Image 1 (spheres, helix red, strand yellow):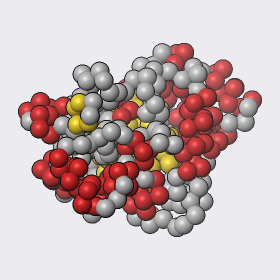
Image 2 (cartoon, one colour; image 1 turned 90 degrees about the vertical axis):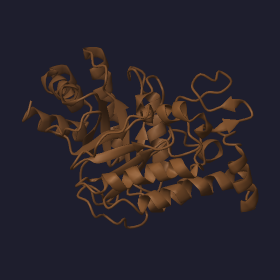
Image 3 (cartoon, rainbow, N blue to C red; image 1 turned 30 degrees about the vertical axis):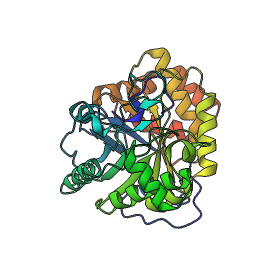
Image 4 (spheres, rainbow, N blue to C red; image 1 turned 180 degrees about the horizontal axis):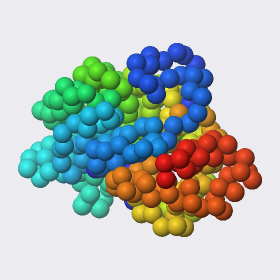
Length: 328
């Protein structure tokens, strides 16, 4: 599953140039008038009261699902536990062994396929093409990069690196960018990428070059997941960092999968705080529609929370909750 499913793991937008905006919510930073609220879900269903709908259609465990029509379909690229079990030669390798969760010499959250494997790349591209035969809003890619700094040193990667004439980090960034560029060519709608939440070492660790990727995407999807947001300074800090660095609109993803009153209060206050950062949107990761509606009902019926929004002049979040009140 995608990066945001990592419980306890860290799972914006000043734009200097005009963006191509073929879809209703893709716009430059100075064109949107209000922050969008959206959902990331494992069920292909929309929920009233939300502007953006992202559906996980290809998971890191190898499960693949049909396109969710009218939604942004989120595709896990190079994490596929099932494929690696069936063909262990697919796995990315380093001097410390294979990119597998069970390898205790390294810290990887998923089982990673080598990003230069031509057969698996073709499999991902074929799936993206299949999605785009349907009436979808677009495609978001996640885990499209190398597992970490020391990967991959399989013979194919080493040979490609040597032939490139580039240093190790530039070759890996070129490889990731080229993959995204080719993937984009198969997408007829909105094209976005999830951004591994490391604003400092993304290129060094994963081959993610912000400046080279920015021209390819309509927006960046930044997941900042946690079990709860009772401590949330890190969310505010990373939102500010990415806003400073990235050159395209940003939507932030926060976890709403395990709702209790205490966790929902902390989550919604975190959304209120980041709403002051001129984000394109905030996405809530939920299991399904009932989970999303529970968030809305809590916000609407919690008088103390709504008074807190008013007292501290969180006008954008107040607007969103007022909209939910008409539905829930």
